[in-house]
Image (cartoon, rainbow over all chains, first blue to last red; front, side, top):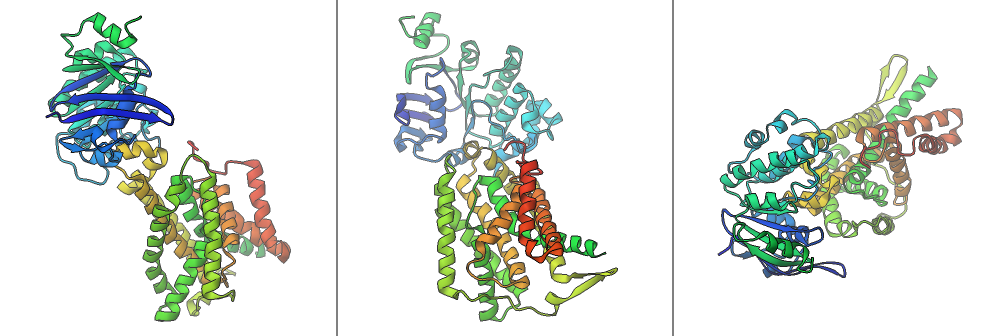
Length: 235
Length: 287
């Protein structure tokens, strides 16, 4: 049984329907990439799994339990953490406080703590007392990833962690993914950068206009398959 | 020397206004909620202290300690079950609901306690004074000011040294992302209003010991509190203390020139600050 699964997931923003029955699955110790163009519904899917957008209870199951109707804070407490699109650091908090907020209200046990996060991203240790938002975009992304890791999640949802960053910075951030996997987290990585996604993923889903249009393992999907699924067959 | 005395009395009076305002500033700083019932909640707390003093024969200083957890519970419940429902992007619903709450509270207090003005019982301490050179300073105003400073130091410690304080700041920055961190914004807001009403209770003690109160004086306390918060810069706690002091000094200086000018001078000082620094003296960078 999959660790995390969506079944017939739909999502609306007012009258606008953003997801039309999305089925994806994430197995234990697996990294799944979700690729797709702008507006494909990738972020909406992440927000639905994380509980920011509420759904029917059965639309999302985690570890066999329906969590679709649970609020975000409860889903996080159960072990599903998210690195939101745009990083969303708290401007009033320092780097270290941004990291510590990931453990709010509970004692967490596991590999990740302030020291191991600083080992993963040494620059954060040097700038621990700076306001989080005073850092460069890449460093802010490291804080956002570290903040999610601090809760020692079983499932880590990464939404567009390369967005707006220089290629060299993206490379640095993606270097951390194998270590995060090795520490035991299963991951869903949302990306527009197909090459990065293919390099880290065990399986890939491609989305277009709120639907999954293609899925498979990176080595079985051809360039044309992905192109068609990404942009539609007519392109 | 009279002017030094006037100035000092004004600064100490500012402590009372800062106490009125700190709770309002806390609530606004965290959830951008302007609570128009704030003044009436101060009056309600004063009546609660009066009831405890009258029924249980407690000293007002002991009664206030008993009233604090009660007021915390009232604040928590008020926010959790009523005010949280009004917190959306639109600023109008919380204004309307707290305005309605203000009227309801005034009428409930009128019904329960009549329109007669009341006062908390005073003792030797409340009328004592200390001589600082040629100037006599009342012990009560000194205690009021010291309490205001302690409240603001305490709130700053809470904000910047505790896990709850981090959660307050994070939720104030971005409630949705805070919920992704396992924080329940609704509970954080309820706790903030609970703490605001604990401060309101301290303000009520000094209000009731210094002057008479009746069910209708809440809105005027709200205006002083509001002016102190605006002068200081919305959400800035030390700014709120300075705002209280500016109003207090303006009032005592105004009264020294002409007793009829006391209240007017406070409002004029507020208007001048608003003209010169529309965002207050210490506005938050991200407001």
